[in-house]
Every structure is written in C-alpha cells, then in structure tokens.
Amino acid sequence: MARESRFRFPYDVTMQADDTGVAAPIGGEPRGWCDIVGRGRLGQALSAALRAAGVPVRGPLGRGADAAGASIALLCVPDRTIGEAARCITPGVLVGHTSASVALAPLEPHERFSMHPLLSVIGTDTAFAGATCAIDGSTPRAMETARGLALRLGMLPRVIPREQRALYHAAASMAANYLVTLEASAERLAQLVGLDRAALEPLVRGAVTQWAMVGGHDALTGPVARGDVETVARQRAAVADAAPDMLPFWDSLVEATRALAATPQVAR
Image: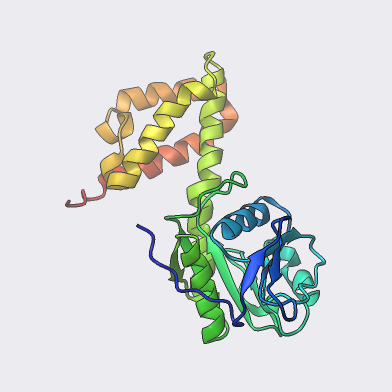
C-alpha cells in the first residue's frame, strides 16, 4: 500500500486546473504550480501522473522554458543538457532534475533537488506506484519536496548518497539496459532456428518473476546450474558455428552463471 503523502508546495497557494488541464491559481499572482521541462517519455509520463495525483502541473514544456511563476521546475532532460536547462530557469524557483547519476551541482545557484524513478517509462500511462525513487536535495525544503513528489506518486523515496550515485546508476543500467542487450542476443539465436521474440517472452517473464521472488541463486535453472558440462559444451559449439562473434559474450555469461551457482544458497 502506498504511503500517504502530506506534500504541500513550497508556497501556500490554492490551485485548480482549468479546462485545458493547465494549473491556474485561484486569485492572486500566478504561482504555485510545478513546471515539467522536457517533452521526452519521462517528461510526458510525469506530467500525466502528477496531474492525475492532484499536483498542479504545467507542461511538459520545451527545454528552454524559464518556469516563470512556478514554485517548482522539474527538468526531465538528457544529462548533458541539465546545466543548460537550469540556466534558463527564473531565479527563485525550486529546481529539480530526474537523472540517476548527475549530482546537484549543474542546478546551481538554484535551491535544488533530484528525484529518479527506478523504473522503465514506456508511455504516458506509466504507473509509478511501488517503484523506488532515488532523491537528494540541497536544503531540507528541497529534500522534502523531492520526497513529497515521490510519495504523491506512490513511490518509495530513498536518499542515495552523492558519492554512491554512479554505483546506483550502474545497478540500474545492468538491471534494465543490459537485460535488453542479453535478450536481444537470445532473440538473435532463436531467429536462427525459426523462432521470434514472442516465443521467448514467457520464458523471460517467468525467469524475471522468479528472480524477483527468491533472488538470483535460488532462481537459477539450466545446464550450468545443474553442472551438466556436456550440454554446456554442445551449446557452446553450436553458438561458435552459428554466431562466432557472440562467443566471448557467451563465455563470459557461462562463467558468471557458474560463479552464481557456486555461491551459498540464501536461507529463507
């Protein structure tokens, strides 16, 4: 169950959405909403999810937006452009970014925070609830803003120390990006025997589900885990014959799997 969020904007304002879906103030100066800067998949998904969660949102806006009148500007832009986008933001706005590995320095001199949802964004209807969200902030208010936005979306905020952000990002890249690389390689071999990606999907989903339930060692199956040396040798010979360029990758995976199979079983 998602934790209840008591998040309020840094400024005490009352907001409502107009008929275009853009947050507008009820009287007074136009202030108090969150500008989402960046029209990529994450910017679109966060805009939709925050709006649905009752957070007044404007955007997603283009990369050069100045966020004038907003309380918060959340930059959903490529890592290399965070500093450039931050320099466009009006002074006085609380500025955040959504990068996994970039520190807060590129957002200076703004009061600043970061929040990285640890999930794959596949569309505007991405569900953030239940995902971990790595957060950081330059001030207590900035930290609580990051935490509050994460909680409003049903995410589980975790402060990742700045010196460990690169390692955190490495784990995320391995879990998502490298998994796709691995499955693309399996797909290539399957195509050589007339199978498509759909044929492998149930196997992949089952393996990931089992790993999520019991962890790597206990979820491991197959000839390497069973110590079936002859079958592993036949597989290697087949790969060497059909796709010799894949052999170094295959060998490294076999060795890593042997090492995992040799680790002590985790008590449950």
